Amino acid sequence: MSDTQTQSLNTDPEKEPMGLEKASPTAPTLLDTSEGNVPPMDSPQGWIVVLACFFNLMFSIGTTTTFGVYLQEYELVEFPNASSSQLSWIGTLQGAMMCFFGIFVGILSEHVDTRYLSAFGSLMTGVALIVSSFCNSPWKLLLTQGIFYGFGGSFLYSTGLTLAPQWFNKYRALASGVVIAGSGIGGLWLSFAINAMIENISRQWAQRITGLITIGICGALSPLMKMRIKPVKRKQIADFSVIGDKKFLLLFSSSLLGMSGFFLPFFFMPTYTVIVLHKEQMWGTNVASIMNGSSVAGRIAMGILGDSIGALNTLIIATCASCISILVLWLPFKSFGTLIAAAVIFGFSSGAIVSLIPVVTANTFGVKRLPSIMGFIMLGYTIGALISSPPAGSILDKYGHGTKFTGLIIYGGVFLGLATAVNVVLRLVISRNMWTKV
Image 1 (cartoon, one colour):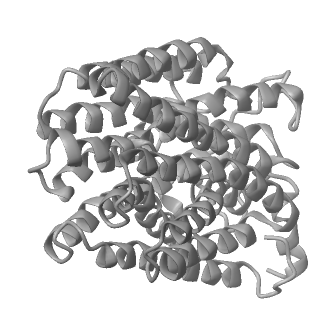
Image 2: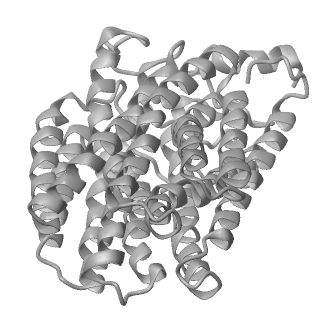
């Protein structure tokens, strides 16, 4: 493939799959273009869909990124005798199950209207939080706030993440960035709101109120979660023709490694603020809010940059900046000011790990194959989430004795460094011309 040909990766996303050395003749067509009145790309209707997806991500990933506030409450107040590893499994399973069940939501979306899937997810997510409010032991919270919430959130997360790229060509990265910014805004205001409710009412009522809000808002917006083109039912459960393609293998590795380092700062920086820097719990919540707040600007900015210089080029910059914030700022310095700087940079850059992977997938393999291939990417996210916080919590307990975070920080930073290296290799496989928009 010449560099000139590579430059066309973003020009016509509805053609046959792009990025394969030889497109498989048996690759399933996932979008049915036979019906008339297909809405045009980059239309105002697409931005209405983006609005609904925005709130879906706010109350799925956004709520998950606030788990650090709950973890702080669990470790310091409710379950002081439980290990960090045990308690971190609750938040880990939120993210992991969201990605795991998202694989099957992608398959369901070919048989069931995405508006119904979104409505079902709204109900299940809210009910999971309400049920968890009646739990008073870590293992019960593991089942409810962890697995049950992850199941319900997968319907919001999967539909919210995959619908937006179908509606856009020119502004695809920006649209995905706006959608993912919903999780940042959600994490920003929910961190303050949950902490305020825990302090003034109780942790139980914080979960009940958050659950009811989720049901009300996401349920009301579900009718807007419309696919642009009707999907065609596949004969295969997944598009296994990509398994041997080196671009896919690199992209899968990038998603796995990136997600392995994604949740650690959100989960452990608040507790680090209290235990290591000896700040009050309120400051731990502030750190989580700062990360989520900077991620809002970052996810939109990364989307704009992705449309300008290419989604993969932007992803390399983002994972590199995330790695630097962990290993260069958080690791060696034990000051509150430096921690804030690390939180700002990590929040600004890390959202691209979630928002730009679907864009790179669509640009590389074509929109027609996006739902199937994103199922494999979700599997990568699931594995990444599972090998993230629980092992890191074990490192904190075993080698840091619950107070020294050095091993935990290195663990997360190395994953982000490896994700950067894999992204660079993928970039070189696609094109060695560094000025090409990829």
